[in-house]
Image 1 (cartoon, rainbow, N blue to C red):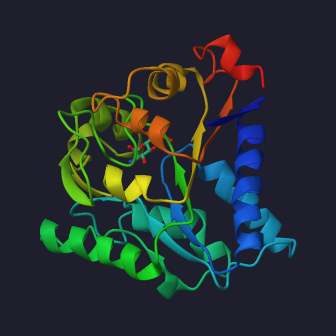
Image 2: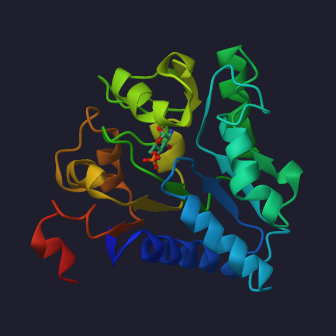
Image 3: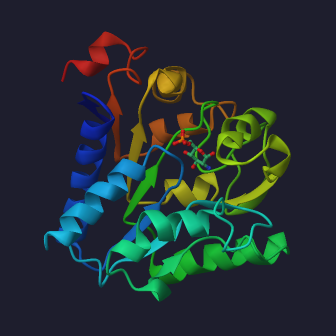
Length: 248
Ligand code: GLP
């Protein structure tokens, strides 16, 4: 695992965007695995900026998203479909038909999840997967549990995730209680993984995921087993990481 220390959120966003840019430049027809949440918004903004300056071309890129709430319409501002369009897709020249977010409007969970897996398979797998970290160490919506869930599946969100994500909704009752998410196997099959984290609220999640035991209780801890993981985090998020790990 590589740890890249950033000064602050803006620096983290710029460094993460640099890594994604390198991927797109090195392989213009790459498959990007994308994430939502507040953490990657600055990364997307930086990519948009470089696209506007003519430094990036997304015309051959495909993307698959990690997760989506079950039962939210595409026009719902809290859906991850809407988020991706607002924060990235509509600002760059990625082809709309080459962007894939799990279909939260399909209430048939088995068919929605199988379709997402099939899309990833047909695209030939993910070249670079961007990940945020939940406060409880979740990745995508893989919540702490008894076992590492495998492929894209439907999850019941934990109370802590519902509370954390309620800041985006009018009230906590509006937060969906279920979501479709790529599973641990889908994520671990990505060739490269880029994790972004900022703020002191993520310090425990970062320390537990990258320096604690590998356990389904901390879903992000499985990333320790992946051969190509880069963590870009600001100083606050790295506050509980052992000092030796930051020396390289
Ligand atoms: C949600 C998403 C995750 C994301 C997490 C952290 O639960 N499903 O993919 O990593 O939130 O979000 P934030 O970046 O807002 O802290």
